[in-house]
Length: 97
Image (cartoon, rainbow, N blue to C red; front, side):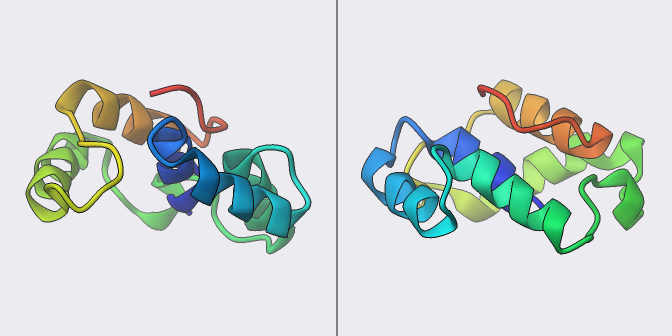
């Protein structure tokens, strides 16, 4: 469910890898292709449907910052991750983070 958002977040930092993902999905954009896949599988498209409480998103950001560290193609930052999670919570399509 979060993978489309993570792809959008990392798009500028890993363009070749995400181009490969997009190509494999028959899409022009990895985030959009992954979102289309989630929808085609009729799986939840938002964190709210998974039972994540709205007031817990800040805790998720803090945990993600600690868990990811330098292992992500793009170093995570609090404002970007919070926007990503707000979109994921509401089920909005992945944006620019």
